[in-house]
Amino acid sequence: MGLEKKRVAVLVADLYQELEFWYPYLRLMEEGAEVVAVGPEAKEYRSKLGYPARADLSAKEALARGFDAVVIPGGYAPDHMRRSPELVELVRRMAEQGKVVAAICHGGWMLASARVVNGKRVTSFYAIRDDLENAGAIWVDEEVVRDGNLITSRVPGDLPAFLREIITALSGP
Image (tube, rainbow, N blue to C red; front, side, top):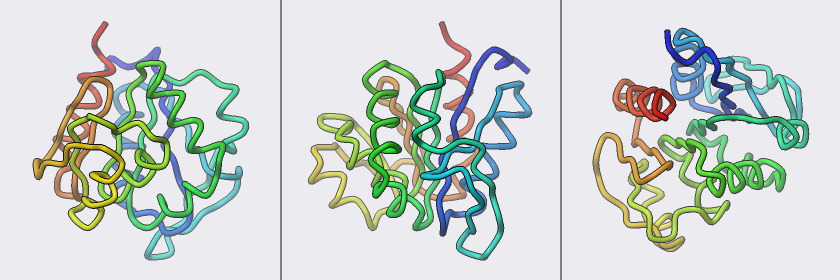
């Protein structure tokens, strides 16, 4: 416990990857953070396997709230998320404000759409390497990469390292 005064948005949309949404959501809650699920709309979304998750806030509502971090899970949800100008703007603002912006797997698509990876070292699921490089990122194949306030990981197996890095970043000054 050490994140009691931190507010974290975990993004969600249809076809999210179950572990990449629920592991950060529950792990950050376990650390004492206030964790809020944010989607294009405040409604229920279904994972790749049909598991439900309810967005507490719409992207538009989230823009008016203060968050210390945003976590972007993978699966195919990021392709739906980036169709929401408000969600893309939320990620862009958080990055510009120096807040923690964390993406795993296909979550890097949101970073590319928010135009926050130019010149940054990142990792992701290997299939979106070209997308990130075309957005100006320096792509590497490592379990977790932190470049300033940007934290990225590749696959569900990287989740423990990904969350350790997020918690460390949120615990700092």
